[in-house]
Length: 177
Image 1 (cartoon, rainbow, N blue to C red):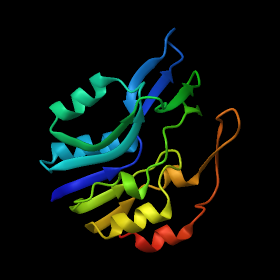
Image 2: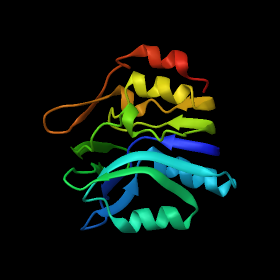
Image 3: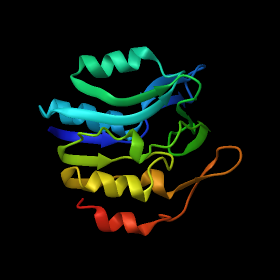
Image 4: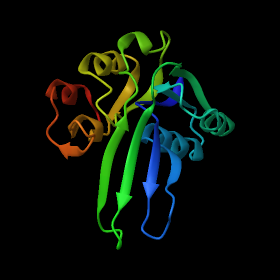
């Protein structure tokens, strides 16, 4: 049993700042940040995610070196990872967010059979977790928390992000936090 499990896509973020000629390319996604924070609190941590063949092995190495269990991470060679482009205004007060690619959805079949945790944090960033997956996760943890950002984002054909409401509100009845 883990103290904390985060479920959602890792991302590869390309961050453009006004004073730089080239963007920073960094590991992103709420599952990464939640996992690092939980490890700093000495929690045993695991991640359930899907990434594409383009996902850098260096990111996985870094996470493992920090003591994060990645046995629930599925890498699909022929797929693309979730990628975002973030462009900041000159005074950094505004940000344009664009989805460049999205990894395959996380399904019930992707969840480890023996998944058990004190807390599971559902952290979608691009609509990758459906109600049925959340319902299965509810049965695997004492506490289920949700960062809804990936459930309220919509993407147009060019990847531009707009905000809407949670499509399947039944997920909220499953959540403790």
